[in-house]
Length: 413
Image (cartoon, rainbow, N blue to C red):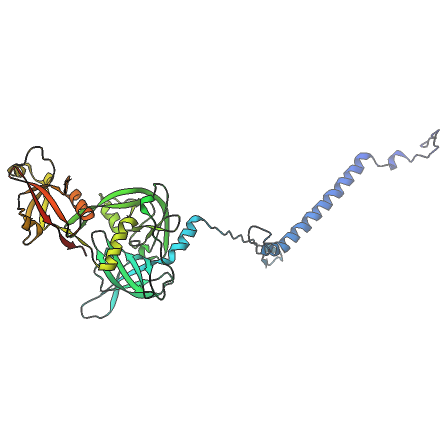
């Protein structure tokens, strides 16, 4: 019982209860694999935590890993991983390139007549655009240094130096300063504002609210915007760049930069406030003087310390602003819809020498038909120059006349 004879091999067979089943053998085998795998995983994790910082330092990982072990009251270990990402882009390259040339411009004034101490009256920004063996030259906004009894420039490394105001132009809100060259290491590169496209990146760098070296980024919103600017009883439509990069008080005179790190405009918060036709606050609208417009003015201020602009020597009012009853007394032809009414002629002025009188209605200058007062001023200050001979067409008591004169000069400082 319990044994049988194999006719061929005559082997003995153990009782069935003593021979493990196949299912039991597989269960034991799986248990062994799991235990081995679990132990291997624990060993691997410990090795990774120990050797990860070493491998990171050797550049094996694309990030840096630093391990630190802190013991708590229960004796357990906590490992912290620090990941440092080195971000470099076209924007960061552009900022690195031009930032050392963007400075703070400090307007200093005396607190009172008897006190010889100067106090900070205002702060703006400026751009170092030129350097020679002795001096470096800074362009900023005229309103930044307006009324200053002393001007200081703070370089990007926080060093301060006294500055000399070489020249100012209130019409285009520009000024040129001169500082010692010894501590100046970087000079900004001017770009070409006529090549700009709407939507391309724009970076504003300056000192808004006194925060040195602040950077804001946006795009060029418009390349050919015109804003009415008033100065010294003159008004013009100034061409400006519009951007949504934030431009705030203190940014004035700072750089508007393209993606190549070239200066394409000079920021002006004054123009921004002038361009706002409502009392409501706006966002995403900033203005800068195109560098192509600014360059000839900068060169003139650096060389001659002033801008001489043409002058007629008359006071005028836009014909469209004259009440209809008064306009009828001028007896101008009905076909004449636009022009400038002369209200006063200065003594010994070019206009006085040409025979112009109060009540005359000027319709053309050098063949350019006048559309409005702003249009006339813009044309004269941007297309004509002092000392130039011009021809003026005007109406007096219904009759057309022509006269010639040599334009005088006027400065806006």
